[in-house]
Image 1 (cartoon, rainbow, N blue to C red):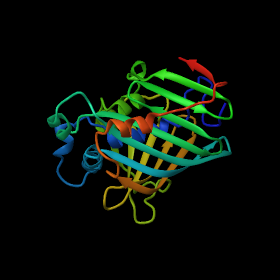
Image 2: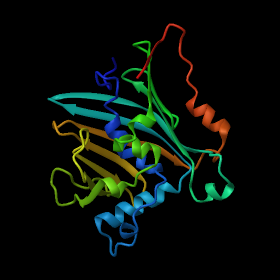
Image 3: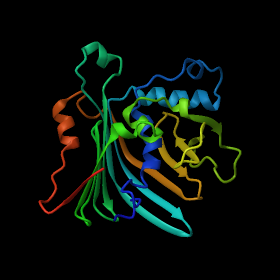
Image 4: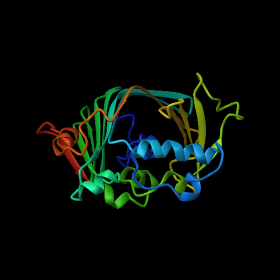
Length: 252
């Protein structure tokens, strides 16, 4: 199996997806967070989500570093988040309603593709000649997939805290930073730290689990709203996955 997979077939990357998927989450933030006075941690978290929930697409290159037990694993590739069309009206689209889909293309250390089309999570690993399919709907009780589906708001599940005073989690390169802590114990995530610039563009995530493993994701060549919005053809291009005939298909 790939270095980014658990034995169960669920990728280690999902801790990062839990953080990233809120970028295109369409659930409204709680009014108390949105109306919070002053630049508090929760107010800044609300501003971040408010910016990203208005996007129809987000593309970027990424590099990933995971540190665990003195070992380091690296990866890189590109990704796209996209808001697909629904059967609703134009007014629904104006209000930001749509199907959230995503695609991650790993180019290192091995070729791996991860696709969520809103119904099925597909993980294809070329080296293993294996395709794993999991119904995303069955996993909505997990905040990771709830964020991907856009059914939860960031501040419903995370408490936003200041991170500047922690010497282990400083702001870097002029970026601002927030620390996100699950309100309820989560089996994958202990903390998530977010670094973002003055334009509210997120540049860096750090996810720590309960065993001290940290995963860093850094983003470059970020483009937003660069794809035709609510386009069925665009959706088809993103979720299209052609695998060789000898691929083992595992349905969970």
